[in-house]
Image (cartoon, rainbow, N blue to C red):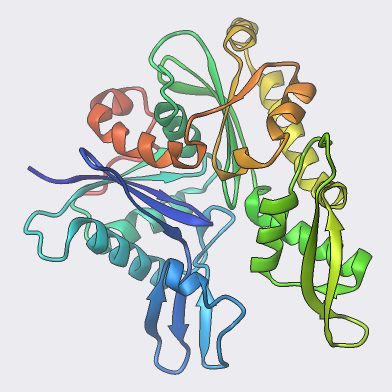
Length: 338
């Protein structure tokens, strides 16, 4: 019997779910490449450690940007590495693979993901939209006529959908998520502190001080970078209030996108969501106060799913078990690639 594998091919992290085992891989979507020989030197966490620290002939690449494949060849090699690591390289039977994609991707982008997964070792490769996978992974029953609403804040995109009777009724996908949070912090530090910081430092600031709603107690942390005036190393103190100011634009965009999906939702389903509330998934769900801010903007109760970062991967893996009903309701975005 073929192994069933669900892959959350995220901009920030790749998570691999195997039926009967659960999440077996959760590593950054980063690949270290030797520019002179095109040799893959490291993948995942080992490659992430190299970000901003490599010599001239080695680059640490993120092959997915804004939720889609930006470097096809490296994505294929990265997928092959993770599939072999999860399933073993000596398997006779190729696994059946379900890969999630953002709800707003084009047919060309879907084909790139599907073919990369097939070349990486998949027997049959299926695609499923992220908010649907997130809903399944969060334990929501999407087969009922009652509407459910999911907001999945990932690394490259925020996917928002209202789902009923196994299908997406209204949805929106915006390229504002974890990576844009990091970029916003980098720009804020340049503008307000004349300090140049890298991706890893901005991500650490986001995790320590990131906030979408005022905290009861203001947090303070040191930030190390390069002074744009003198060119020398410099340390400044940053507050959680400053980081909230830095994140204002991407947070505003996400809240408005959620509001617009509710405006597109039929009144009967909107009434269901009033009762059931909105479920928040993805790594961005850990941002302090994001649920409160979304509740304030939408007027709905917002709750964070259990293990929000793993919901999409778990849902993607579980979807293979109910593939027939998913195909009947057209939840998968394309026919299987055979």
